[in-house]
Amino acid sequence: MPRVTARDITQMKAKGEKIPMITAYDYTSARLADEAGVPLLLVGDSLGMVVLGYDSTIPVTMEDMVHHLKAVSRGVQKAHIVGDLPFMTYHVDSAQALSNAGRLVQEGGAQSVKLEGGQMMAGTVHRIVECGIPVMGHIGLTPQSANTLGGYRVQGRERKEALQLVKDACALEEAGAYAVVLELVPAPLARIISQQLTIPTIGIGAGPHCDGQVQVLHDMLGLFTDFVPKHTKQYLRLAEEIKGALGRYAQEVKDGSFPTAKESFNMDESIVEGLMEELTVPH
Ligand code: KIV
Image (tube, rainbow, N blue to C red; front, side, top):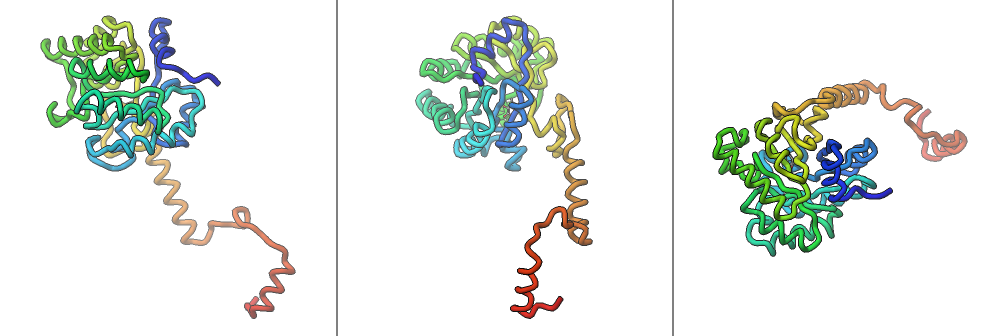
């Protein structure tokens, strides 16, 4: 089965095809997303929050990313896998960025990498791309910079900020990025940016005019309920379903109704009898 490439993703925009993208962090969910036909999977550093229980993406390490990428890679045959570069693994200089991007591809099995930042990161993006690793940009609300952005708030509502985001997007395209994530950007601005670029925009909380959409798997399945972002559509309420199932399981173990003969294994009755006699086990 041919693997979706970064080039295929860029060409989807030219063909007028919308691009669905979803996060994945483990073998089972990645396999399900791949089988469902989602062409683009992101092993995002959001795993720090929805899988590892941190209150931000800042503590996520390269080791965390490589570990989860490996699991996702084992579950996927067709989808294109993007690996997120975590906080401070690409900021020092282009050499640091290139070496860590290389690890995500070589050790983790990603086919491309994503990093946060616009104009300021253009040189780094250029360097990684010229060494053969496709790069997806990420602008707007960049969670790794939440401390300087004043939290998780919509970006680009004012003229100056909006113009900067347009410049950031153009700089990423110029540097060779094959797509760019727009996070928490007003829909009219996301539309303008999408029209300015040849490469696709992938929105999260950026309205319907983006060329693609990305959601955090645990949010859209209703599995992560610490908070539900406004931009999330819950297609399932898995947390409630799972809690219900676990409650029934615990109850059945306590009252002895699980397991039954159906979930148990048997053996030859004569061997049982022999054992009981030998060991003087009462009937
Ligand atoms: O880490 C992540 O899940 C992301 C998406 C929100 C785009 O970066």
